[in-house]
Picture (cartoon, one colour):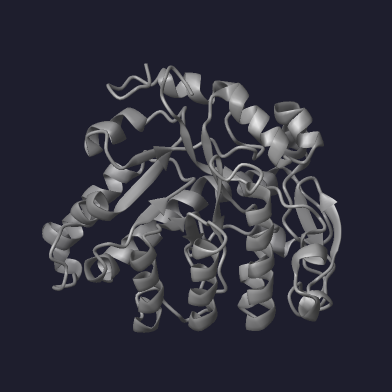
Length: 367
């Protein structure tokens, strides 16, 4: 609790253990999973196998500065690898009642990437990750919630795992499915996924998905050389990637008519700040109902993009973002959720998360 308010962190994260696949993948598939060579900070580095990890591929782990920041920021929680018990202690310490937890980088998210090349193995890894999440959150299921990952390369497997994760494991959301190249979220075959989300009433978590072309400087480097320019481009990639990806995905759901056809479908737009949203809603509105609509628009949209957003979407905000007051004004304080990004290296210091949010110059501050 914070000043008698119940607090929900809509976007926290897991740091999965190195033994995740060894212990949780079904025996039939265990030998097929790429082997984790070592942990680079909180990042799983896989042995190149030529199939899932290309020979000579340089995996883009966080820089040393990020690893140092982890232990400095999180202390004992870092040293205990964010066990559920130590996480709950931090939540009590900082006033967070509930955390909704997503996977991290090349750890839990690796499962759905494998599914793009091997459906059955990727599906097994998604099940393994979701089973581990269920076990982790079972320490206190009223306070710890998780977002499931899905094998997007096969509609049947995707829908089956989404139903299992929500109905049997207690997942409160699923990550927006990552599809094979050439496939699109608006195609009719994926209606089964949107129908299930409406039937079971869970939101789709949109969380920076590489759907836009992003800077990948490390992919082109030889060896492990990282000079100032390459590190700066990594920062630019991160600065652009999340908001641009989420703008693209939100626009895709609206402009292609998915939200029109499924009025009960809900989206959570996460980990990209919220300050870009007033600009993007205004620009999308102008491209469907304003002067820019001459460039091409769907005649099937009965509402303006802003109306679809207000009816079906939420955006998460950071405590310390400068443009938050404008978002609150634009949305009349509605359709905004709050997140910490705990325990990522670039997240706000946990002890500052609620005080900085409370200090925001808006009528909707917690004070």
